[in-house]
Image 1 (cartoon, rainbow, N blue to C red):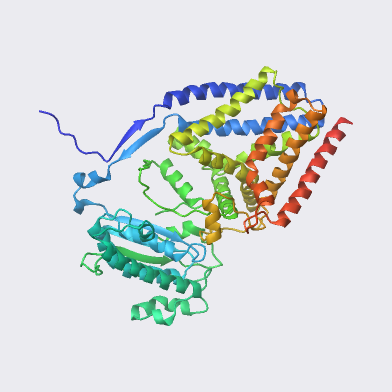
Image 2: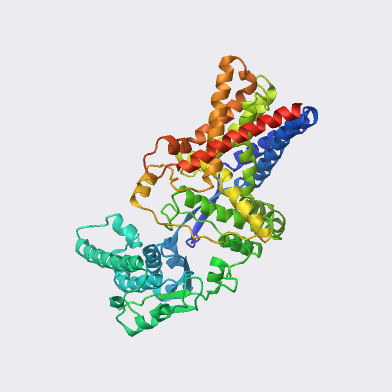
Length: 593
């Protein structure tokens, strides 16, 4: 007789690229050691002036940082695993009555940067889970203490009494109403019903957006005594976003509330924890701890909490089904992206430079592979050093006719070529294997360079000022709101500048420096003052910098919309680029005299 096999929830298969990754890692590590040896040799034998010593020391430090980050990244590539999930087998393994209770937390902080209708759609998606509804409890943590957000959730609860039965009856897979209606899910058997549910949704949306626009809940919407009690706290002058008492509102209670078919509804609870200017509230982590055990000490509370739980013995499995498990909002204007990453840079510094450093504490608790994997992200801001050096130093040297890399006929040139092509080639291969495109890979590597010249610098500076007890701006919510013009430009893959952010200045300075160095170097070759064989690497780096700076050039010269680089940023950057070039020239001449 054949033995029966119990159904499985997921399978795991080790990638066939594992062996190739390991072999390449050994070869690439040897190349890195050869490069560091050359740097040390050059620093020892050819640093005859102050300027040459400075240049070669900067290159050595930059490549040491790159080597350190590459080493930690290999922990992710040593044994890649692919999983396939089978959620349909859950009911074969566990009776529905044995399903565990499920607590889901949604965080929000600002109704104008995180529109309540987005929160509503997230909440409705969770309430409509294909899961025993009486076992689902949804907690919405509103750190802004917003009456419009509470109102939106109360309206969502009314709509949910229609939406949940509709999803069950029609076996709806897309249970986020906004995404469902946007996809035009209509059929001959459900057009009428779908039309009715869509009218209810649009009616709710109009009410919520009207309240958000007015900034308060009008009396016409408060029709029950329970509603009056819920919003009474907002009617006092002492209640502000930054200072208010605790608000806990049970909107749906599974023990009493039912949908239009008599089916039990899930629990829905609105929570806004007490806030006071006189006491520390730990931002989002503090808000969540009112409800998941979040770890304090870092602005990246999700990363830090997951990391600490892993160190304490928890195991996790990464599931990435073909159909997206979650939809999310991300900022699309460049300034919002950079502000978000600046906040992450501060938080990651708080982990990397603490007693919980992944390279030390993490490797002891979880072993080197997991410790290095967390360490790669914790130390990601250190990439500002090599990115800044390679964005400016070869170009400034090229302006002054100084050769800092081996010429093409030198065997060391092949080492540089292998390291560059190997790093970018492997990264591109990873992107393509995981379903990405060349265009997305290019945008991703370009964003690394942009972050290295902007938010990594600003985030690191803010972290060290904070460490010295100097006031910084603190936590800022990233805006998820965009107008139609911004959305159109985003869909066309056009960068959104638009505002006069200081983080755009180093990007624009680098764009000017690379442009001037590239064409200056080419012009010098044609005039005979530059040796192409000796300066080819520097000309290539300047050209590569120009290629990555294309969005900046486009924003400077070819934009008639509101998303271009502001004129003030352009003028400041031009002046800074001129003075940086002039100062480096004086430095080189002074060191020779």
